[in-house]
Length: 151
Image (tube, rainbow, N blue to C red; front, side, top):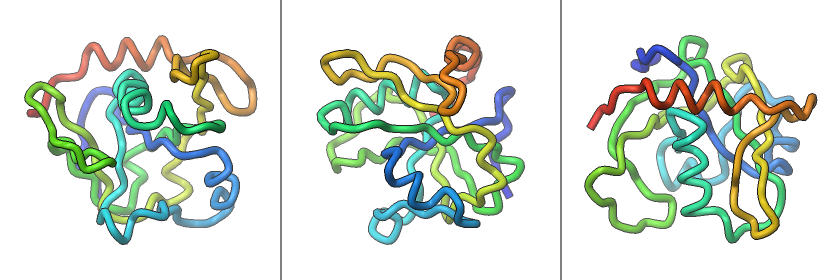
């Protein structure tokens, strides 16, 4: 069951497109670092995901996607808590809170796969539907403004 009860219930997980392609037909997705980390890093909005992507992943080449996850469909526990940086760096006050999934992401909880757009310098700038190529990040960014802070 999920403990996420925000007005916009979706949470977002970022991964390389090639990794998603390897796992998209599987019933449950677990990232390669799950064993060592113990949970799946997520963000509560597209805006938050873009901030994380530019802080930790802008130096990595390639295409990335965001899994839009409906917590009501998620079979694993979802806990909103303070940040744990993927590179192990210290957290600072004001970073906000992040959804962490303690278990796998069941395929039927993934309601959309969104491609992350990048500029010529590799910075992540927005999202688009992976199959259709349409922009829909404005609605998610508006929802992010309405989220209450948890920390």
